Length: 432
Ligand code: ASP
Ligand code: MG
Image 1 (cartoon, rainbow, N blue to C red):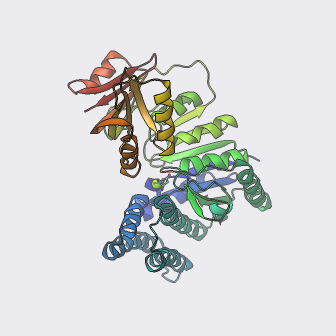
Image 2: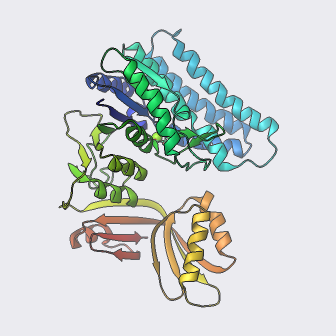
């Protein structure tokens, strides 16, 4: 069966017009079965993170205000989409919001124990995708699509690493094949749509889990792999994978073709256009990935596929803001040796801190990491027991693949370089 997997991110569904546009795109591609994965609308995930924080801070006034803002945002989209105010979608979205409120209230009333951040995060933040998929589903049915909504928690099984759940591929593959392929097979007309949520899954106990921020691309790749899809498309508000984020580099250009290898490197270094975990399942099953604009369908976009010996001609710039440079030295002025390094890496892995760049000297080891206080504050405290730690905050990390001298000057010119690392293809600069 020729199956296509489409992923629409928050920017594609941030308004009634956005949802109508998505419905229009789906109609155009309805010749064959489509698996569609959708993220939360607009900046909903960020707003839910704020709500979560208000809840954990036991701040009822802020909880009510954050909750109300989210509700208003979604209902204003619903009001624009559906003229008939008695449409079932109003009741369904209302009931999802009530569930969310119920969860928060229950926590306040009965949970005097300190609550585990990552667990609570997944239970609350996952509502973004549950709500957006319900709205998109009803709109697609309203416009006459043959569409069914599937709760991804009954399909994607993960472990219980909340906020960064690992997929159980065996269980997930069996479920997706049973449920989604069966659905496609049972359709008599071409162009059936199976719709589900990105970003979330559930563990063996049935708890909701999430796959990490921006994880919906990965969700789509999970579906693509399990369904042996022919191709997967990520629909974006940019023309494709650009050689730099057009928001800060106006003369950026679209890269028309990329090898899986190059794409995984770019994603790894932080090119936010594709989630880093997305490429592996696609490469493993040789599924072509397209990154295309949902704004201008006439643009060809980027095609990521199996290509060897192909060299990019333009430098590719990746910028990561809000970076922290931590220097770690043994307290007794002893050398940084393999034993220290392996211990430091074990600690980093225990605290689930990802190192973006590292460098060591005789008596110090420096790492550049995302400044996520939830992880970094306890990490620095723990390291402080055996090591002297110093850190600089508010830094930027630039990675330039296929760099030239001009490219490096363009980025670093006139700025203070805190750390620099060069290999044949890549230069990384930590700038103040
Ligand atoms: N809504 C989630 C996030 O913003 C997942 C995603 O967009 O891929 O992180
Ligand atoms: Mg999102």
